Image (cartoon, rainbow, N blue to C red; front, side, top):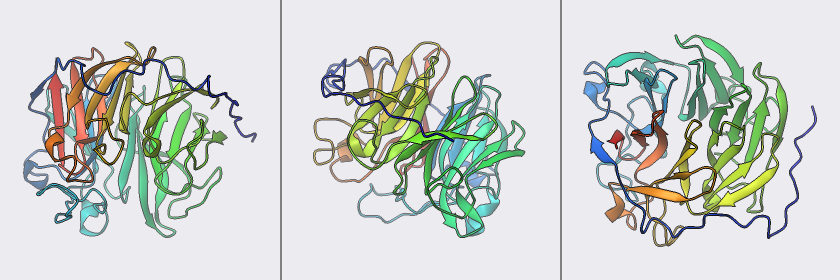
Length: 353
């Protein structure tokens, strides 16, 4: 299959629009409320490491987490926070479900994926209610380095990559960090937790279309593409965390723009009906991406204007910790409910407008 070509751009073309000052004057019209919690029979009703949150077309909420495992004691995270680096669904944790589903009102509905993922990372729910999860573990020749598609009832429908085998090509990933399904059904995978630093595109049936990107800071290249969002026109928004930017491409992988005003993106989400972009920054401080605060940046996916900012609850500890706050983000169809999946604080947060 032919490779997707990246457009060559000049420095003038790459200038971002909407370069607002970082989270200074933006309003915060959101109030925290109680978020969905696991039922008592699952880990006593407490989350482990959360990594992503998504909603299905009916507004049901899906929490994607690392099977309740928590690893404490890292001096670079806040006391009581997990280390964010080593929790997984292996060993005795393999008996726990990585996906928990809740109604819009927070009622626990179902759980999925037991034994199917080693270390959860990327997650999506498509327009048909299918669930997609990426695995950044590596159990040689058995599990990890793959993307799995589940039906709305949890049946395995498709696997992208070769489980337990790392590489770079149409049927190999290294550590796939993100997955997102476009409105036309095309599948975009961020192969970004290992050295590959690329976006790989597949047709709805899983056949390889092409890819773009390599390690670097130039337009079209990446340093840890951590999450992906796609708008109604098929434009691909990539949270290029190591480069402190959101990069925007057309559906073919041609570079369109880069935005730095949304912080250092760990998670991104785009409401295709309202063109509202949500970006969560869980790692900025005075030494990493200085001038930006940890929290949730909310703005326009059309103009790049940052309109609102929800501060990280652990913002006061940003200079003392490696990570806090959300690595996953989502909102409902009316932009009145925002959900944040916190890795190290191991919680799901919810805000209402």
